[in-house]
Amino acid sequence: MLKNIGKRQLTFRRCLFGDGLKPKEQTFVYKRKINSNTKLLYDVISNVKQYQEFIPYCKESFVNKSDKNGLPSEAGLRVGFQKYDDKFTCNVLCEDKGANNYNIVTESISHNLFYFLYGKWTITPLRNNKQSDLELELKYKFRSPIYNAVSSIFAKSATSLVLHAFEKRVYEIIKKSR
Image (cartoon, rainbow, N blue to C red; front, side, top):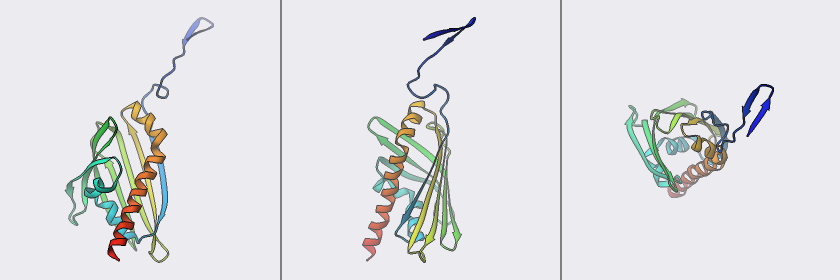
């Protein structure tokens, strides 16, 4: 649609996915209380190899490199939903902060899907370490405007689904150990 404003002519266009500019960074913070000690929760989250067994839409999970403690230092996922199927790799830092506090930090090193992807899991004890406070901070920017638009719509529900999968995995491990 054209509009005349004085001597200038402006063109207005609609863009299906946002303003048509480069995708914008998205940041989300999710918090949840889990009925588990922090060490078990840390062990489940840091065991990237097993993600494909319990995380929805995770078709493959792999560890390329491990640190001196056998924890992943480079790992990745192949995620698929309907016609979408993508694989990415991240540097991983698993930290025991002492006093039953743990962090797991991930940062994308494959840049075909993301401009960047950053995730930080923070696990802190509650109730004499019988319960954990779990916080997941995600920052990302997809290369694809389509992925960015879709993720802005479904990020909360998709992340809730993933967090629920981790929580369920922890409960299954607790149940087996009884």
